[in-house]
Amino acid sequence: MKYRTFGNTGLKVSVLGFGAMRLPTIDGETGRINEEEAIKMIRFAIDRGVNYIDTAWPYHDGNSEVLVGKALKDGYREKAMVATKLPVWSVEKIEDADEILDKQLEKLDLEYIDFYLLHALNKNSWAKMKKLNILEWLEKAREEGKIKHIGFSFHDEYRVFKEIVDAYSWDFCQIQYNYLDTEYQAGKKGLQYAHDKGLAVVIMEPLRGGLLAGEAPAEVKRIMKENNINNSMADLALQWLWNQKEISVVLSGMSTMEQVKENILSATFSAVNSLTLDEIDIIEEIAEKMRGPVSCTRCAYCMPCPNGVNIPENFYLYNTAKLFDNFEDNQKRYHEMEEDNRAVNCIKCAQCEELCPQNLPIMNLLEEVAAYFNG
Ligand code: SF4
Ligand code: SF4
Image 1: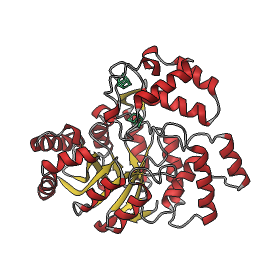
Image 2: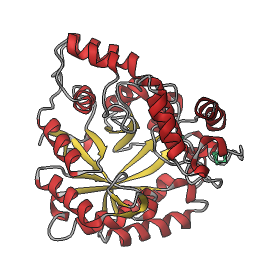
Image 3: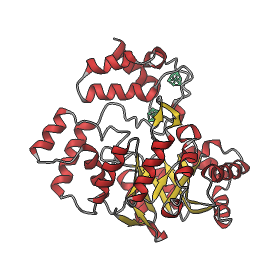
């Protein structure tokens, strides 16, 4: 495993972090984690040097933190650090934060949390947190020994990102960044800004919800072949990130042992400035071919839809159909979904749109998807 210094904290953190938001499940139910397999995967990663485990209050319907706590029994706690997050959308008064943090320590069964983040800050939630004096509260939690390092994860424009970075001496931040999203949200500019201010930067969505890890579209395959690039798609996306010195940890939400092994192997070969300028140009060329029409990361924050629509799955099928020029297979998969799950069942209640960290116009996009697949 390779390690990098975590901002000004001086900690040495593995370049690969284990994201516990897409753990293996039973019968595809997000809240029913396949515990035996998930614990095996996390421990396998820790045994090979991964020392950053990222979870959060809502992951797997609240069960991810409990699972991570179990995985860290039997001596694994001493070998790994844990990140979890305050669900700012559930905090209306400061006592709510107290209650949630205590509950998280209980769920994780830990004395303290190594890295504590305000989860998914944006303009509105940051304004709400400021009103509640959340920074004072975070410092108090640190003095009480409940948390060690303070950070935030982020989904909004660069301008808001800069304002938040400037508001406090954060230890770290977590941003969405991959070779498709360099100008999106905090983006490349935000990465540089945070790094220059001494924050460690943790990367989420390195594979854009799996889009950058699947089979390459024909045009991308051609570019890779012409340029003798033999990496897997996932490895290419990860090496592009690790090439940048401003990045401390890349989180990967791993669902299978095979992915764990592949990612660990990729991390082993990672290095700052390992890519040539030509290779970086080729990846930019690939990015041009990989941008699907809907920038959905499949985070599922918009779910559940009260009318049963499976929002991320509809966008995934639409993107896949367009990117791979494969209408038939994806239309078939669309019709194989339960009837309620299909885009056509959106009744435009608008509940989902305010929950989407990508600010997608979900209702209009679903209409587009329905018109495409339903004809
Ligand atoms: S707007 Fe449509 S997709 Fe969104 S929550 Fe309402 S019914 Fe579901
Ligand atoms: S529509 Fe938005 S909230 Fe829903 S899965 Fe996609 S990116 Fe996430």
